Image (tube, rainbow, N blue to C red; front, top):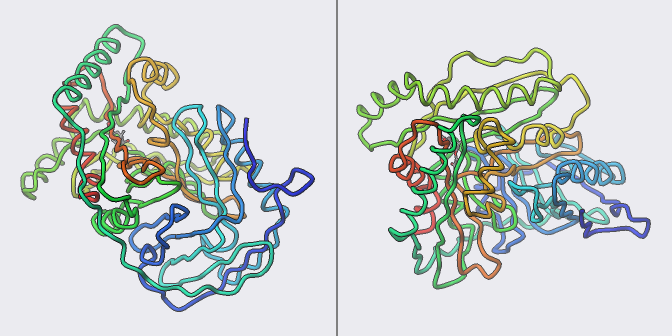
Length: 418
Ligand SMILES: C=C(O[C@@H]1C=C(C(=O)O)C=C[C@H]1O)C(=O)O
């Protein structure tokens, strides 16, 4: 089932006209966003795309949501007229999107009316609509900081989650399962409706090596690239295996070395890399799957990381690759289908878009989709947000350590909201 919100009388998307023009550097991309829930963002180290307005949108749901989105996008592209004077990833016609983790309603693809992008020192603006629009005024505004944030994370909820982790450990020890990724959520409330541009700016400043995103109130800064397709090159950054930082650099280096030698973490990592490599293999030739991971250092945690690459050998667009990859073992478990069933049974949480794919697609089918981690979903009235974090549970996981790891993964959004 899917709902198309922009329809011509024949049931197809209305034709759009998109034009991208190079512009002088407009400054920080996130600073240009208007104070509106329509704001869309995907930025990484100052580069990326931001957008606003709604030229067209689509809300697919259920198991077929990726294929439905891919078909809708093909129709939009086919019926549109695109004049791209920039020809960089993210210029021309683009849609931003976010998909639910589970086969449920709540996913969306949105073609904005205005997109502003930056890549390697070049900047552009794209206007999208029923007819050719003028270049808008691009002025930065200062977002309002969150007011009166409080988090509901009492000892009872924390104990309930460690009991769930223990349950997962028992299920794994009983056989048939290697790993289950369990998540928890913490509700934040605010005295005034949240201006999401404020946490976005904080996240982008503090986590420049992550991808900072916002789609329909779902925001965060993810370190994990589910898949990027660019000019036939496929890339995925797989993360699994985590250690908390202490704030003492020398000690953290020692911890990074122990992470790279930890058989529990290496095994957990291997499951995740395998699931990505196996999902990409039918679409790729010349795949490179490094034998050993590197350690990715973030301000709050360190992860074992592997960049898997390949050359596209079929005509799949990035959404078809997303469909093959989701959910990876990094956010589901191993074997993934069984692990996802256990998650539905014991986690007791509607993940919504958390741990689902989030990113953008261009007219050629290229695009970038991260996994929606280190994230939160803002309520429609802006007065509360639900933060999410999860951990890969294996046979010898200790529930208290997993709780501490989940706390460390909540830090980016928590800090950005206070
Ligand atoms: C599930 C999350 O993170 C995932 C789980 C990891 C782990 O268990 O070590 C590491 C990175 C992510 O793939 C999260 O951040 O919520």
